[in-house]
Amino acid sequence: MTDTTTLTNNLNKALFGLKINAKCVSVRQNRHMAFCDLKLDDGCKVKKIENCAPEIALAIGSKTEPIVKSIPSKGIVRLHVVMSSPEVLPFDNIYSSDEVNPNALLPFLLGETDDGRKLWTDFAKNPHTLIAGSTGSGKSVLLHTIIKNVFRLNETGDFNIRLVLVDPKSVEFSKYRGAKNVDHIATKYNETISILQWLEEIMERTYESFTAAGVNSVEELQKDYPKYFLIIDEVADLMLQDKSSHKFERLLCRLAAKSRSCGIFICISTQRPSVDIITGSLKANFPARIACKVASKMDSRVVMDRVCAENLAARGDCIIHNYENDFVRFQAAM
Image 1 (tube, rainbow, N blue to C red):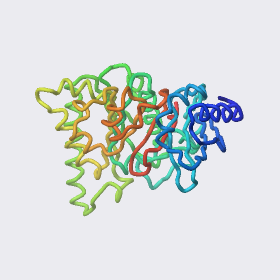
Image 2 (image 1 turned 90 degrees about the vertical axis):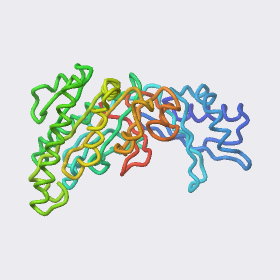
Image 3 (image 1 turned 30 degrees about the vertical axis):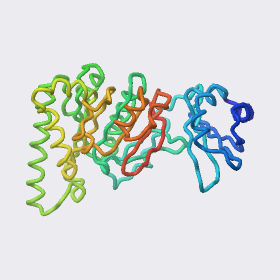
Image 4 (image 1 turned 120 degrees about the horizontal axis):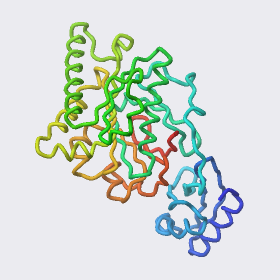
C-alpha cells in the first residue's frame, strides 16, 4: 500500500469483482492515511460500498476497514484507508512555540489530522474532555502528550498552568512526581476525594474574589490567576469504588459544572466506556470527546454518540469531537 498506482489498481479490481459500479479517480497519501476518491456511476449506492468495506479492506491490504465518506460538493465518495505501516509521529518534531495562540487559555497540539494538518485545540473552550479507548489504542500516550503540552506552555512564561494528576494504576504518572508545575498526584480513592474537595475550595474562593473584583471569568484576568488542569487516568476504577456513596461522581460533576469560569479544567479517561462508568451526568458535563479505538459499536455510541471509533487502527488513531472540531480524525503525537 505504499505505491498509489498499485493501490488504485487493486481497489478498482475489488470494485469490479464486487459488482460496484464505481472507479477510483485519485489517491492521496500522508504518513498515516491514504485517501481514495471514487466516482460512482448512475444507480450505484454509497450504502453498497459501506456494506462491502470488509472485502475492500482485504483486497487492498488495509489495516482496518476503510471509513466511507460521501462528499456531495465534489460528487465523489472518499475512502479513508489506514496505512499498513504508519510512521511514528514524534511530538517534539511538530511542536512549535511560534504557533501557540497567546489568547487561548489551554492551546494544545494533539497531533496531525488525517489530511496532514497540525491539530491545535484550546481545551478551555470545551471546557472538559472525555477520552476513551481500549487497551493498546494509544489513550495513555495521548494523556502524556497533553501533559507535555502543559510543560511546554509553562516554559514560555505566558501561561501559568498547574497540573493535578490522578493515577489509580500508580504507574502511569509516577514519572512526574516532584516535577515543576505538578501540584498533586493521587493514586488512591480517598486521596482523589481530598483533591476534588481541595479544588472545590479553590473554585469557591476564586468566585468570591471575582465578585469583589467585578469580573465574570478568569479570561478577564488571565495573568492574575493560575489555571488548574485535572487529569484522571482511569475513571472506571474510581467509579467502581464509588458505587455505595457516589461521592466521587457528585464531586466531579459539581466541579465540572461550575469550574470552567474560574480556570479549573478537567480531562478524564477510561478504557471501559460502558454506561455504568460513563453515566449521563458525566456525559452532560464533559462535552468534548476524544475516542481512540474501542472494542465495539456500542462502546463507540457511548463515547461519541455515533458509530465511528470501532474502525480506528489503534496506536494513536483517534477521533475528536469538541467546540472546534466536528468528528475530526487525527494521529496522536507520541
